Image (cartoon, rainbow, N blue to C red; front, side, top):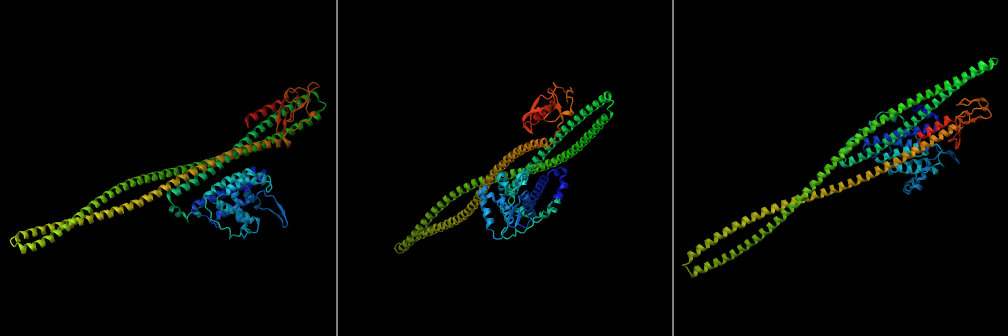
Length: 603
């Protein structure tokens, strides 16, 4: 793996092998997490243990956590255990005690490496892997017992990887840890998976399953995924910008060093040429010594020219690296613009869903009004039904009275026939009148019964309508509850997004402070490793700046920054240096240069 990545990252990464390994692992983690998120979103269902991108993610995480582990002695030999630092999480976060207890209770695990692998899978299923590792990297005093000083978990690459792991919270993992043989698995990274330009092999199987989800739930989940990816892109862009700023500073420093070297070479060349001319005019007898001095000056000039050529080559390399970084930054900005367009589209869809919810709410209000109208109509119909029932009761009473009158009339007729034969015709006419009245009453009663049946049918239809409206009202109430629940989820998601943005800002400020400290340490280390040449007293007879000859009254003084010899008037300055915190003597040139550097770097 190391040989592959040496070709990718160029000669800049060859300066520190541990830094090269950290950069390689960081890039592998980026590829693995990005591929896992994209394939999982295209896959459209819960991931299981046999999913190849998920298996590669665990292998990459295992390599990242193993980087820089201290070797511990045991009775059986030497070993590197991941379980030691992961056990610290339950001390820092009580919620992780449940995972650690579950890992210890698994019967099939016999090695610490197997327990560490089981712990990673359980933390991913719990969606707390990023939170647990963030708590772990904040306690570098505890991690230093398990890792070397330049390990990935103790450097800024570990914080970047933890920030990238936040995006995995959108993935639902259903892993069976109990039946797997985690002790004897071999963690080998499959690079062929990341050399492909697309990951469409896993998209075609479950693409139709995404369409079966609800519109509002799918949009909310997709909005969460896009926001997480947008945060990851912002983190990558910030890292690229910091690298570009660092390269610009190194480029500026190299240019200043190049100008100083050229100035020194020119000055030394002028001094050498002047010395040669003076010695040639005044000391013709010591021709051999002058030739030796001339050859020495020529050799120094060649060395300075070679040094200048090397610096120019290094400057060309730095410029090419800067161009590559600018190209990468443009690509990242293009990717961010595309994701912003996608985010705008999702916001439009969310606005449409809100409009649909408002329309459903208006329909619910209109249905409530219609239901109230129907209830009023039902109450009026019930009043009419009660009136019709009272009228029918009156008609029935009148019918009973008519029947009683009829019976009494028939009895009277029989009596009148026996008693009064003369009145038979008149009584017969009265009977016929009574019969006609009876027929009329029967007809009215039949009409009333038909009317009552019609009203009963109307009442049944109104009751069915009322029951249907009640069902619709219940559905509308359910939609109300769903709408309020979605509003609460949206508020929670906004709160989480704000917290993550604040955490990223704090991380960026800490990263900038650490980089400034590293630059100061580099400058001090350069001064301690002999970046300056200390000129001997007998090699200088004149001041470097004013070129006045030294004497008893005009004494020699060394500049503690460049190491050259000056007179008292040309070196009457004191400034603190990285190698010496107390103020020391420096020449006028170094004094102006150091003041300019301090003014350009206010922090």
